[in-house]
Length: 199
Image 1: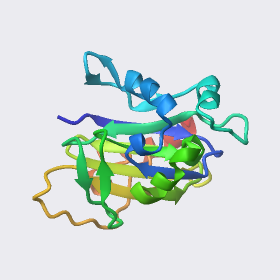
Image 2 (image 1 turned 90 degrees about the vertical axis):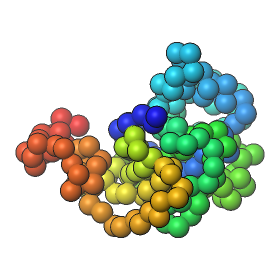
Image 3 (image 1 turned 30 degrees about the horizontal axis):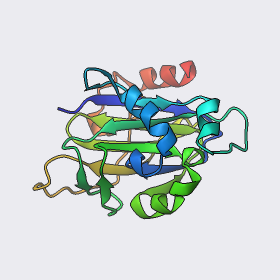
């Protein structure tokens, strides 16, 4: 069973992200920390926002050019663990750690950049990132636009039953919950505007 999640990291300093299996791009020196954050209660997946501190990043040989960069990324376990999963863009994402993630490019270990180019996809963003997983196999990766208060869908990946033919369409997404607008459970537009003001 897959968890439903709706997580975000807001920052105008995040300019480019990578989507794929985090084990391909996170430094080996950081991977134990990732696993410890994922599995806290007898192998139950609980960590969706993975965080590092500056000492860990420095030890991994990653140099950050700007102070204040968020040292976090978002991930979730796939519906069926490892495998190859189709996406809206037509790219087939390979998974070997049972997870998919959206990771700011500055957290990618220098020695993993070649793997990043081959095994996932880079996207330009502005304002932050959001990951919405519906619990039925769909991963929706978003860019947050702080100036417009909108979500822009970067990629949709389906990790459910492989015998189903999935058709992806351009959709409008709720800027509050990240769901496709036609499926949105938010009460009304006023609630969305209030949420934007609170942010």
